[in-house]
Image (tube, rainbow, N blue to C red):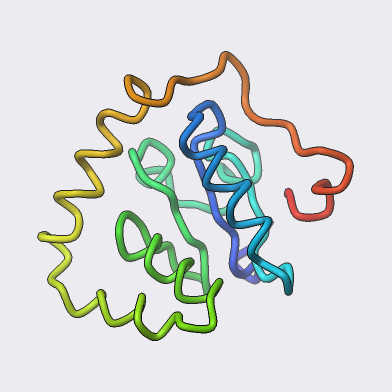
Length: 131
């Protein structure tokens, strides 16, 4: 794998909240802009720098760069919806402020939403979207 891959969302494959977020993105990404891979996958290990693999965050790989936490979530949301400019305007809120909320949810996601024993497997229809 190389940095030429673009618009990949790396997610915690055993996190129920993360898996529901992936389902949501797939339903709303009519142009199939995003591809997906679990942070636990060989693909993630081949593309992402090692310090990103242990993050409590989604990672958006775009243009050879890794974007994380609330910035990644906002950029994904902005790409999904026609009114994405409104979502993108939230990027003007300083990162530390946005990430306080993001990290609080990330810390509690297993307690609130649960986790599975194994990473999510895509359905046959989703197969082409997963790396």
